Amino acid sequence: MPDLEAFLTELDALDPAPAGIEVDADLLVRVELPTGVSSTARVVGRGRRVEVHVQRPEVLAGALGRAELGRVAEVLDGGGITVDVRGPAGPVATLGAGTRSRVGAVLTGSRRVAVAPAAAVRLGWSRAPLRAALAAAGGAAAATVVLWAVRAVRGRS
Picture 1 (tube, rainbow, N blue to C red):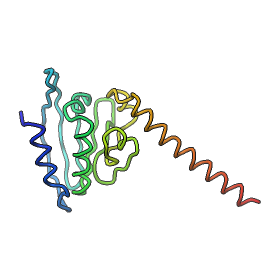
Picture 2 (spheres, rainbow, N blue to C red):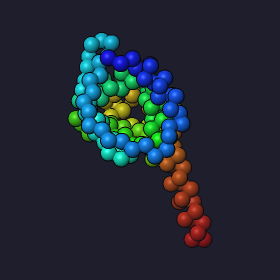
Picture 3 (cartoon, rainbow, N blue to C red):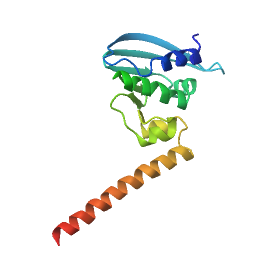
Picture 4 (cartoon, rainbow, N blue to C red):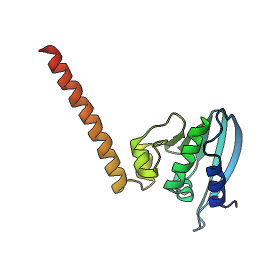
């Protein structure tokens, strides 16, 4: 099995990734944790969009780790590539180009990771950082609604 740290080091060397990368992929990947728990994932993509269909998203997340996931997302963004990760229960996360998430920044250190809320709970990412990120995002949304309401009331008077 390839060494994850060596892969991430090579990935960092691509930063910033060359623009205009095109993907043509159809492969099956097996991920195994040090505990022996494993999962398979099918990676398919063409152009600038890739889909990863994984049987056990928690194994993939455990193999990468949050910070490493953020590093991968930043390189993908630099190359203009978007990756959608899906599990048996639906969407798990979107990484890379076009992705902006405050919650992702709190969880992974990168705004280029958008974790589906239901998936975050299933992955066990529902602890304090996720609650804080959701509170911040909710606070920002509430502030936007209040600002909009104040402007609407002022506009009538």
